[in-house]
Amino acid sequence: MSQHYYSQHPEVTSKQRSFTAEVKGRSFSFVADHGVFSKEGLDFGSRFLLETFTEPDFSGPLLDMGCGYGPIGIILSAFTGRRAVMADVNERAVALARQNVLLNDANRVEVVSGDRFAGVGKEERFSAIVTNPPIRAGKATVHAIFSEAYDYLMPGGALWVVIRKKQGAPTAKRKLQEVYEEVVEVKKEKGYFVYKAKVKV
Image (cartoon, rainbow, N blue to C red; front, side, top):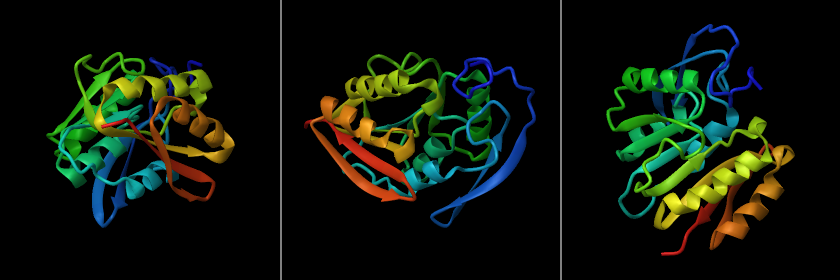
């Protein structure tokens, strides 16, 4: 487990790399590293989620759960102009995310450290929570994120999830349907699914 991106303290030797990602015609710069998810660049699932996400029609901050080095939260904050909180258990990822916040002048983004929602303020409520969940952490952890997110959403808010079919998309959808009042399959492509799970108004 110590070598996985879900570890709190990755033991793999650090070797940072910089890259640029273009999303919807805008360019963003990132630093990634060994021991962090998708160290080679913006992965397909995260890009698919970013391109599929639609902004809530009411005000409120965003939360990127399991943010890694920060691309989803930073890019969504830039597109929407909203405050965003990014959370991860991996301390190397958290350090990189904070570095990337500065690199992209993302002054409306805050990065917190902790397992699942442990680093998020108990009174915080979000208009949307987005996650490219940590599959390697296991189904129990992924499903716990789905369940715990419910209590951090504003009325009418939604959890957005991107997940591959072969990594448990059908099971994930069933879990979401157990917890949320409305679950929509927003889009699917190349074996990836984006689900939007809404709480009642």
